[in-house]
Each structure stands twice: as structure tokens, then as C-alpha cells.
Length: 447
Ligand code: GDP
Ligand code: IMO
Ligand code: MG
Image (tube, rainbow, N blue to C red; front, side):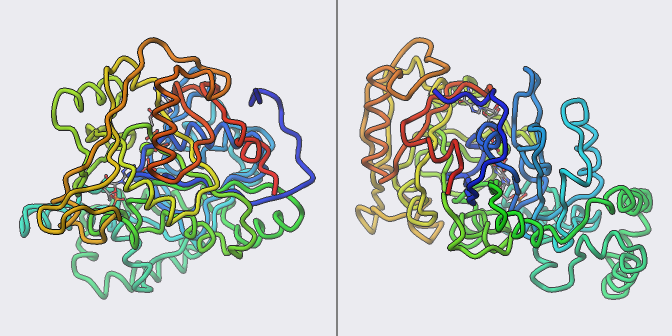
């Protein structure tokens, strides 16, 4: 058993490891990144913004991180928000204050990419307005977190956004605001009606300025010097802008390839890619979800698993494990291994199901995750049923210490999804981790 309580000296051999959510987010990335980060020198968030909510337990205290990378609680490490991230400055300042009792945040251990785009009060307002418009026109909003994520990425792709490096430069920031106000009456109105939000927005620039740098160049230099880099994904594969269940997705590239684009590192430099999945499935917000359980079983999973959004508090939709979606995540990301999380939540159920294929009323049996959300919405899962297990699960040790029924369940998931399960989560705490023999590379982060 490898303990993460040992202090981790810097290792001679470097490597770049990417950790990706394999489902619709909230798989337990925060807990596992915190655990894996014990072997890293640098932990970099590569996309998303404060739509993410990553939960960790530090000294028994629950901490939810929205923007600060989940490696911040390891002394001697550097955390990075890379170019592909969007940053809400005021929220980031508040978050660094929140973690202050556990971790000192300085420009030495938090690097903010000058290339990252900034979420302004205007973007937050626009997110809410667009959701209301969607609801009014089609009756179906996306169910975004209303944190301004979509509008900020829209302005980035339209090449009209504000980058962090310009935001912390008072004149550049003022110029950007003036340009936007002259282009859009609504923006100008927002400036007037939300004057206090904009004043706070400007004030945060002074606080963040010392942290802003060419973070990507620094990370590349560190990698060349043999440092170990851990890339932390937010959201999950099925929420990816290109490969997820569009339009019910987030606005960034959540998949493993997105990490390379965000950090500006050559894909061939990556030495390991790991997925994190729940042993069942959840989704927050709207969009198709073939294995969703809208009955008592779904309610029981939600209650036991405390499946309520870490960012918005919304109840998460719960359902059975979907091997079709998992196979797709494996294909898209090329995982070296997958961590299967929250096994303890399934304890006490008499039987468990895994969707191994879909049945569509017109198209018949479907084995591949469809690109069309309407097709996906019409799919009924083809289930295989498994015997459940009862009682408290071990919190430490190897995967082989799980009850036989749980091991059979893992084997079935591996076979039906083509993944390799390298660890199992049996509790929210940092050390509540059951490891498989193949986890060694992930633990040491060796190239
Ligand atoms: P993230 O967004 O992927 O970091 O996941 P969230 O933090 O949004 O949601 C995961 C939830 O499950 C959090 O409340 C965690 O504390 C909790 N959690 C993580 N791993 C486990 C586990 O193995 N068992 C249990 N019971 N809870 C877990
Ligand atoms: P973590 O990192 C789960 C969902 C929202 C909505 C859609 C678009 O904690 O796993 P957005 O605000 O991004 O425009 O919303 O994506 N969503 C998440 N669901 N976990 C997340 O992050 C999410 N971030 C966004 O609920 O359906
Ligand atoms: Mg979350």
C-alpha cells in the first residue's frame, strides 16, 4: 500500500500526467487529484472556470475548490491556471482567502496564465439572460451554472475577449471596457447598473497582478528540467464542447487532448492519461441520460451519495453505470487506467445494473455513443444485472480487499467498457482509496 502521508521529495524523472473526468463531471476529481498530487511538482487546471466544484477533505475539513487547483494543499508545489481556463477574478481572490488557513498562496506557488480569459460581470449577466431566452423560446435551457462560462468562451473564440494579462494592466482593461461599451448598448447599460460589481472587478486586478505570468513557458521549462506535471481536468468527457452531448455541454475542451492545447505542450510529451468515473452515473443540468433512474433507487443513490452540486447545490440526476458512454470516453481519451469512485455508496443494494448497449425504437441496437442528442434521448439501455454487496467497505488496501460481488462488478465494467480499473474510492477522505497494482505509475507520476 502506498501512503500519501509521506512527504514527497522532488523526483529526478519528470513526466506529464493528465487526469480527466470520464462522465458528466463530479466524479471525484478533487479528492483524487489531491491524493495523486502528492507525487507531483506542478498541478495545472487546464480548462473551465468556477463552474467546477472540486471537493477535498483537508484535516477533516471539507473544502470545495472552484478555480484553485486541487494540489494547493501540498507544500512545495506549484499550482497553475493555464491558458485554456477562464477566470473570475473576484471569486479567485475570495477562494485564495478561503484556503489560507490550510495553504499559503503566493506568486511562487500559484501561476496564473496571462493568456487565460477573464469572466466579467457582463459575462455572468449574459449567461443568465441566454438561459432565460432558451427557456422562453424552446422550453429547454441548458441548465448552466450561470457563472458566465459560455459567454466568456464565446468572446474568446470571437477574439473580442479580455485576457488576464490585459486585465491586470489598468489602461488595457479600460480600453477593453470602452471598446465593448461602444459596441454594445447592453454592455454599456450593465456598466451603469452594476457599477459596484465593476468597481470590485477592477479592484481584484491589483490583487491578482503579482500572480500573472507566462505560465505556459514556465511549465514547459519545468518539464524540461524533469519536474512532474499533473494536469487537472474540470467537468467531464461527456460535457466536452466537441465530443459531449451538444448542446448540453460546457464551452471548453474537457478531454485529455484539451490539456495539451491549454498548456501549449506537445502531445508526445504526455506520459500518462487517467480517467475518473463514479461506479454509477450522475448528471447536473439538462440533456439526455439513458440510464437515469427517476424512481426510488435513483433517490436512494442521491441521498446516500449526497449527490447535490458542489457549485450550485442542485440535486444531481442519478442512474446506473453506462458502459457505452464509458467505452466512448476510453476511445476519446485513451486512458491508461480509470479510477472507479464512490463504491461505498452502492453498498447495501441487492442488485446493480450496467448498460452494455442501447436499444433505439427505429435504429435498433446501438453499441456506439451517438453524436445526436435526440437519438441518445430516445435510447433505452440494454442492462446486465449483477448481485450487490452489503456492509461497510474497506477504506484502505488493494482492490482485492473488496467483497467478491464488487470485484465481479468491476470485472464486468472493465469487460463491457474496455477500460482498466486501477483504483477504487470507498470514501471522501484523502486516504479512502483502494489501489490496484497498476496504479504505481500514477502514484509516482514517472514517465
Ligand atoms: P469533482 O467535481 O469531480 O471534484 O467531484 P465533486 O467534488 O463535485 O463531487 C464528488 C463528491 O463525492 C464530493 O462530495 C466528494 O467529497 C465525494 N467523494 C469523492 N470520492 C468519494 C468516495 O469514494 N466515496 C464517497 N462516499 N464520497 C466520495
Ligand atoms: P466539475 O469540475 C458537473 C454542467 C452544468 C450544465 C453544463 C453547462 O465539478 O465536475 P456551464 O456553466 O459550464 O456553461 O454549464 O455543464 N457543468 C457541470 N456538471 N460538474 C461540473 O464541474 C460542471 N461544470 C458545468 O450543470 O449542465
Ligand atoms: Mg464537481
